[in-house]
Length: 240
Ligand code: NAD
Ligand code: ZN
Image (tube, rainbow, N blue to C red; front, side):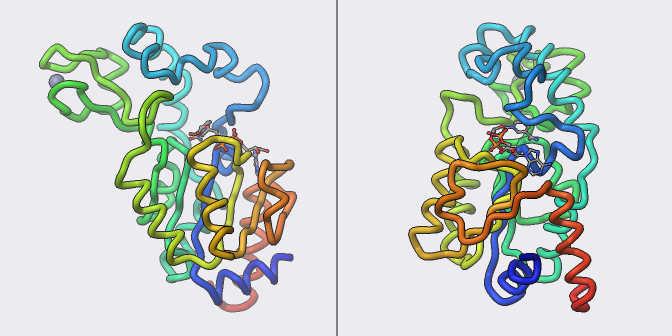
């Protein structure tokens, strides 16, 4: 299986598509885990109206959910994607994650479909703020509310990142999906679109996903276990 996937990556233009599952081994829980912070605050915490109506409550949530993301380190799966990009074997990464770990790992071409929870800006004058500053005061020097640079429910995906994703899909002949349940739309529309142009779809996940049926290869494994196996194989082949 690893050999087959390695051959695809080494011979055809490839893009990665990642979800919360690539970061669980960096200590960031995914949405669907029980007793997670999300179950404590409810899904409405990601609603844009909730944010404007309860900024104080939202920032309590942000302290618990976003600060660990800010402090987390990338794992071997994030790092392998960055290494493949550097060597010219990966066009880039399309991610649903907001944890900044692909950039931290060294990836340069990352489409962040849902924004970035380590970045903040003023809703009025757009001045940028660090997470440390915003947790001290949620208001800008101009007096307006500071918001995270994430996509809330009720907001559109960022045009630039969506365009970048479509561009990757146009060029790619292989897509490696790592750690996504593939149930969140419109993001999950991208692997479907990719399959429509007869691309080779490879899915890596600990459990079943919504698109296993249309995958060419499905690997039931954790993100880092997969990455380490692939890295070892590529080292044997002298790629790294
Ligand atoms: P999801 O929570 O719906 O699914 C995560 C998937 O990863 C599941 O299918 C699970 O089986 C799999 N998984 C968990 N740990 C894994 C591991 N170690 N190895 C391999 N697979 C593993 O996540 P999603 O598909 O990204 O969609 C949910 C939304 O959650 C996204 O919009 C995303 O923005 C948001 N989110 C992001 C983060 C983050 O940035 N790290 C964390 C939580 C939620
Ligand atoms: Zn301002």
